[in-house]
Amino acid sequence: MNTQAARGSGMTSERTRARMIERLRQQGIKDEVVLSAIAAIPRHLFIDDALAHRAYEDDALPIGHGQTISSPYIVAKMLETLRAGKALGRVLEVGTGCGYQAAVLSQVAKEVFSVERISQLLDKVRARIWNLRIHNLRVAHSDGYLGLAEVAPFDGIIVAAAAPSVPPRLLEQLAVGGRLVIPVGVGENQQLQVIERLEEGFAERTLEPVKFVPLLERLA
Ligand code: SAH
Image (cartoon, rainbow, N blue to C red; front, side, top):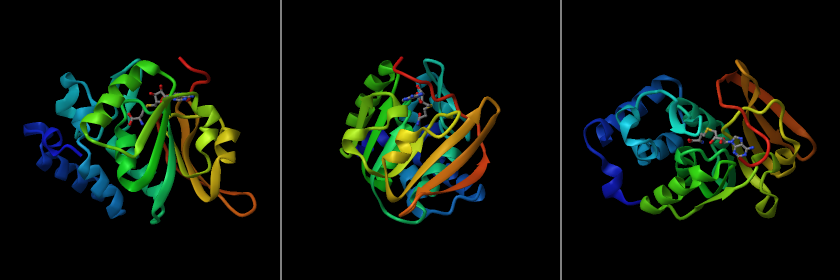
């Protein structure tokens, strides 16, 4: 990573980031690998300048095109659930958005693929990945309902938008022992779910109520 760009100043400094990590611990996040990854990625660089001073508050913030960057807590929770204490090889993220969660994922997985349906968001993401010298993350303009069959299977799949039901293609593209972390539901009725692929079949668990933008079909 390019540490000079990452360092920031004032409201975007390392100290501000350290306070965010403390808050995540108080909110129950325990996975040190995830906490270190979040500490390593400067969230303010993924948000427009006008809002950058709010980058380390525990909020979802607008990133344009009617989309939002997930709150630090939800990113931490999803990654902790995806890892389940184990190292991750190949991971797919659906819903790149501003690229923040994908960048954090790049610190906890060997290889990350992230797909986004709004192509205009991806130009900015590519510049951010380049500036931070992140080399194990690929982004693509693609419909996440379809997964990314050409590089499947995945040890983990994380979906950053709420689906009315679990997309079957994503289940198909999970490796045995792999986990899918996904908000399921419509409007205000969404639950974070984790689905693990077993030798035979799947094991499903509901974690907590959440609020995500909808997973939409087809490219924008
Ligand atoms: N992980 C992001 C959160 C982005 S919000 C971050 O850290 O900023 C969810 C994103 O999912 C939006 O950018 C939205 O355009 C995208 N999205 C919604 N439906 C999609 C689909 N079918 N395929 C790919 N991306 C989708």
